[in-house]
Image 1: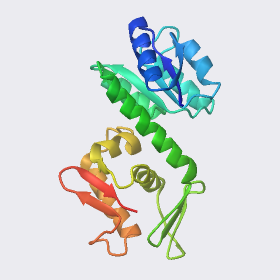
Image 2 (image 1 turned 120 degrees about the horizontal axis):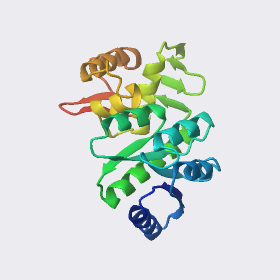
Image 3 (image 1 turned 180 degrees about the vertical axis):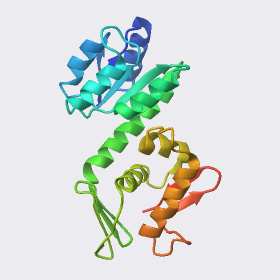
Image 4 (image 1 turned 90 degrees about the vertical axis):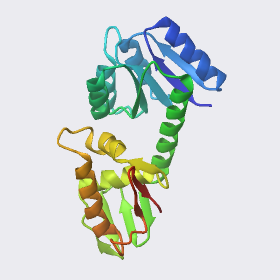
Length: 225
C-alpha cells in the first residue's frame, strides 16, 4: 500500500481524490492549505504528493520550492488550471515531477502516480548503470567506455537519466524539453536532435547505426539497454 498526500482546498475535489485513492488501496493524508501541506510533507513518509497550485496561505509553487530546499524528495504531481502554462513550467523547474491540468479524469491521475512511483523505484537502485561498453555512475557523474574515461556533460547525464527512467519506452522531444531543459525558452526540438547526435557519437559503437539511442520517426527517441 502506498501513502498519498493530497493538498487541495476544494472540498469536493479533496473528497473525490481521497475516495479514489482509497478505492485503489492507497492510504491518504489530506491538507486544505499550503502551510498544512508543507508541514505534512516534511515528515517525509509519503510515496507521492498531489499538490494544487492555487492554495490558501501558501501556494503550491511555494510549497514545492520549500520542500526541495528542505531536502524532501517526495515525488510531486501538481494540479493546474487550464491556461496556467507558466505554472507548469515554473513547477517543473522547482522540482515537481509531473502535472495534470484540470479538469482531469481520476484514471489519468492514477496512471501518472503509478508512473512517477515506478521511476522513483528505478532511481533508487540504478545509480550505477551499464549498457554495451558504457558504464555510468550518477552519484559521481563519471562515465567510461571500454574502460576509458568518457567525457559527458551534466546535461548529457540528465538526458541519459531520463532515458534510463523510461528504458524501452518512446520518449517525445517535448518530454525531454520538459524534464531535461525545464522548458528553457532557448531550447527547441532541433536542440534536442543536436544533443542526440552528439550523444550517439559518444556512447554508440557505430553512431550511424545506433544500438541504444534509437530514433522513432515523427515522435522522438527510444533508449534500448
